[in-house]
Image (tube, rainbow, N blue to C red; front, side, top):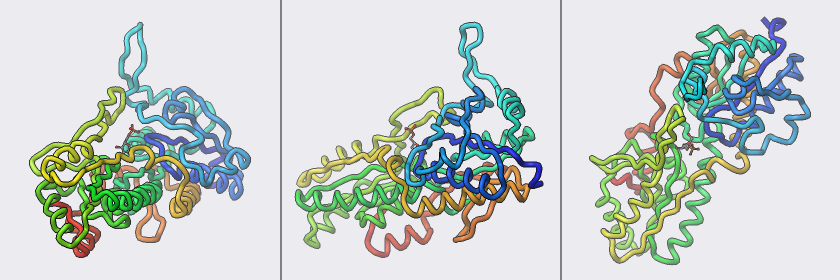
Length: 366
Ligand code: F6P
């Protein structure tokens, strides 16, 4: 097997996140230094594969990128080659152009494609694997909602950012006796809100998996006042919703395979809370893409490096159609079929993290 694999290609797809560059670096270094493989990187995810737009990845070109967020290969969350927007006779139509990508891989002599992405990007990776392409997946997303792995890289950096923001909100909230809301990302999963909420000592954590009752938030504010604490910190996931209510959608990105962008619940809830708790000012901070930018955390640098090296080892073992994953503290792998066949990984309302938060007095406003 080892002798057959001479050239590998990488691409990064979906929303960017800290650690992508660390994976690119680890794959490139491990493949070149240990096995003398040639490495190229397609630009802008699958779009680059379709357009045959790539750059060589060398020891030189991946030097100095370990700590840097973003991706030197750029990314796109719009280009599903199995349902791709093309212009035909002046009309925009959607077509399966995956055969063009397969041809491009053949033309460049690429033996294995390493796809670094979240569920959308890895769904296409599985589909290329079904077409006979040798594919390896690497799990990325700040949302940590991918099945089969305990942790996706990028998540740790995001919760570090949110935790620091919550620390900062504490001092200003206390000075003004305010209720401070912090809206965080995560799509339909509450991992970012939950873990950063615990680390940042939030009084109220609102997650999609546990619909909230606004009156319970007000109760918490009163309870804290009775203890002499005249401020309250609320972390609210963008996918959180009230009991019997709906999520707040900020945007529909029409040409994206996953067009719904959540966001706006923080400001809406702040308005509603201010009506309910008239003697406190309520403010909302929306962290947005700050959670995805900047430097990569120490944990994510290490995890991304482990994933990158493991991806090259999977190639050596001939385990194509697999995604590297982390179970406990052990790196292993699962088939892309299995990863994509499962629901996204959500917070278990009965799970340990929710329970420990409750035991120390944090409320989910159920
Ligand atoms: O999946 C990562 C993520 O940052 C989500 O947490 C968020 O809902 C979404 O992407 C935002 O997407 P965009 O970058 O298109 O605004």
